[in-house]
Image (cartoon, rainbow, N blue to C red; front, side, top):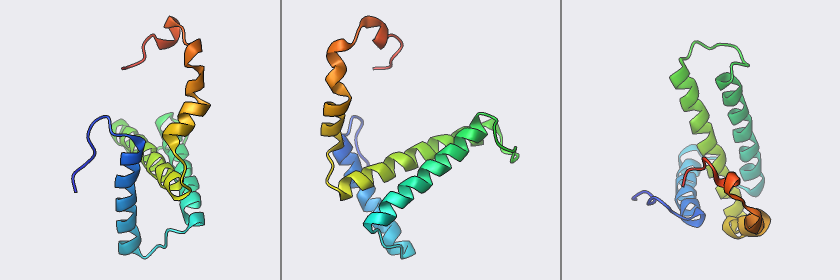
Length: 120
C-alpha cells in the first residue's frame, strides 16, 4: 500500500485511515462499532489535551525533552484527525462538503489582513 500524495483529499485520507484501522481491529481484536469510534475520538482528544498541557508547561515534568513533548503533541493531533475521519466515514459525512457549507461560506468576507501570514 502506498501513501497518499501531497494534496490528497479528505476522502482519500479517510480511505487510507480506514484500512489501517481495520488492521488495528484484526491485530488487537477490538471491534470498531459506532460507539467505539466516537468514544475513541473522545479518548484521542483527551490525549491531545494531555500533550498540549505538557507542551505548554502545565503538567508535571516527566523528564522528556522539548523535542519529545512536541513530537507527542504532533502525534496526538494526527490521532485526532484520523479518528475524526473514521467517524465521518462511518456515518457517511462528507467533511469536504460540510466544511464548504459551514466554514467556507464566509469566503466573500475575507480581507487581505485575514490572509496575512497564512501558509499557502
